[in-house]
Length: 190
Image 1: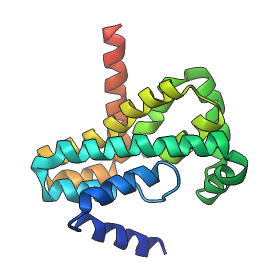
Image 2: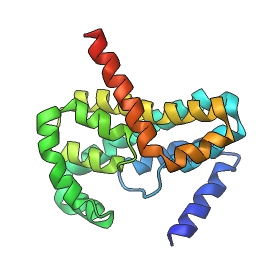
Image 3: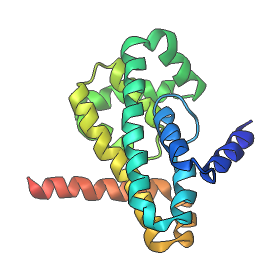
């Protein structure tokens, strides 16, 4: 089933309405869809490198807006829908381990975790369930999703197809490096 879903996703990357598919995938992946928008973003940037910025922007904004749906699921429907989604993706243990991190590090943990390949739906649902401040959640989501998608798109624009293999194999390392750079920038500005 996963292979069929992946094949269907790749077909959408070549569709004439691919940007709308990218927005839709970014939106629904933030709360319940299993496939990250990178599988659309990567081939779309490779096919049209000069559009890397606008594609990353669509991906980022749609993901943040979709994050509000995940937040609402956690806030209003954790018992009826939230646990089912987390259970389906085997994220219940990660959810339970996430609470002390959110309590201690707040916005920073959302920025760091949201920029990594950790399923963003875990973060959005958890933020709602934990009643995390919506303004801070929005700020952290914009930063983290922007880091994630703009970094991937910029690398593909700059280095083309060879970077695709590098990014896909080392996505966690690339995202961690980007997050460390952003945190370092904030600390230097302070």
